[in-house]
Amino acid sequence: MSGRSLLASINGRPVGTLAEENGVWSFQYDEPWLEAADRFALSPPLPLQDDKIVDGSTQRPVQWFFDNLLPEEGQRLLLSKSAKIREADAFGLLEHYGAESAGALTLLRPGEPNPDEGGLKPLTDKSLSRRIRDLPNVPLTQKASKRMSLAGAQHKLAVVVEDGKLYEPVGARASTHILKPDHPDEDYPHSVINEWFSMRLAKAMGLDVPAVERRYVPEPIYLIERFDREKVGGRWRRLHAIDACQLLNLDRSYKYSQGSIETLAKLAAACRGPAVVRTKLFQWLIFNVLIGNSDAHLKNLSFLVSASGVTLAPHYDVLATGLYDSRLYQQKNWPDRTSLAWPILEAERFAELTFDKLLEAGQAIGLQKPAAERQIRQQRDKILGVAEQLYGASLENELETSPAEQRCMRGIIHAVIKPMVQQVS
Image (tube, rainbow, N blue to C red):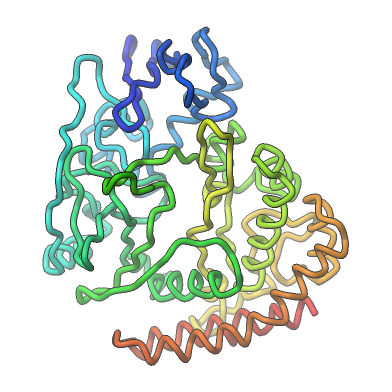
């Protein structure tokens, strides 16, 4: 297969041409984009330059960057089946779904018109409930106006929340929220309440996270406000966001294996205000340790890119995954056999983490010892009380919280957070 090309644009402005010939990917920025006052590179591995950027045999910055726009694992398989395109044909999937991209980048075939301004299509509880029940055999996006799923491994849907009601964006209309139902895998029950509680706890602990909410249709759904959007003149505008794999020129398959304390230091160094970013990344690391998040991989860190540079985006996909390894769910792995997403220095499992190990990690990221100590103590000494308050407040909410969901939240506090607090004391 040879000679394919797609035109990349952001908010309707042409950026460049993505091409693939005989398996080799390339990207060339358009001259007007290179000359614009507000120009920026799509990512550091794709620098602004007149010459075409062509992938090599070992380093493939173009393919890795654009492949990272596609969903992963089962989500990608479902999309490929729906489009009747081989799962391995990433360019073909981008060709098929690129006009419906849920991010800032839109990819169109040469001569293909830009999507119209679009509008909103009501998303009723009944329709959404039916789609959720059809998972995992049918993608959540199967009947959506925009079938291109967001990057990642979980089932998600880009939606608009307006006056409290749910809509699906049509045409060029930008989404405002990401919707996720409970994970269909029975090994991860009540993921909606888990993520909602974990993210609300992160907010209460001072982490920079978007606003989240939960609803029932009657199946539980989780909604998170998009951080890659801004309202300008009453209209939503897309912001260009990349994940850590795209920032570091990594294929998506390295999202776990290339994670390390040294990698966090590299990410901070690539940002504006690296000292502040180092502190925020260490804060994120400590929190993930305390709530037992074993899925804090590199695609769960994002960055906003503009003419002003690269900035760390608010955190997302924060869940107490260690809970599913605990006795609460008939498992005996937590914390002795629960692996970290990637080693923290020499520690590979949660049971191997100590105060001193976290302190060493903070210094390796680039914090001074007193600052690292302060960060650890603040979170360790505060998190249990804050979690108990949040749990109590959640029961007073007008939403009905099932006994199983209450059990999940209590499990996060007592089966996961409490032993981790003791462990790093």
